[in-house]
Image (cartoon, rainbow, N blue to C red; front, side, top):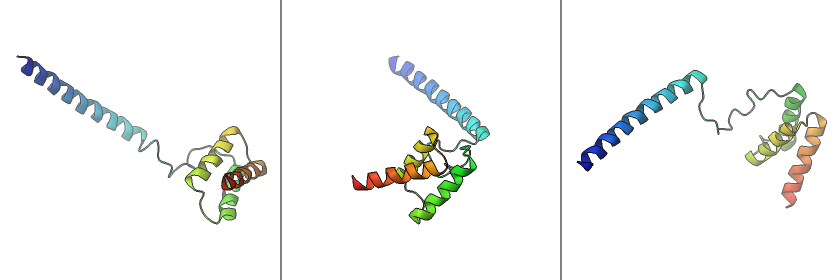
Length: 102
């Protein structure tokens, strides 16, 4: 009897899990949510000012490559703190040089 109740409960939970995942998938498709932790589209929708994009392009020119994940994290932290323009570039280069020496 206990086994039968356990199997019934397991079946109910399985059906509920399938329904909930289907509903979540349907909502994700509506919102076009793919992976909230992905960095590959970090520039899209950030609402950066034009001078922030200009400084980002200048950083790419200075480094000669796209910033690494750690460098990008530093850059995004500085943008989040409110830096932009030449000050953003200066602070970014200071932090990069500091992290290379340690």
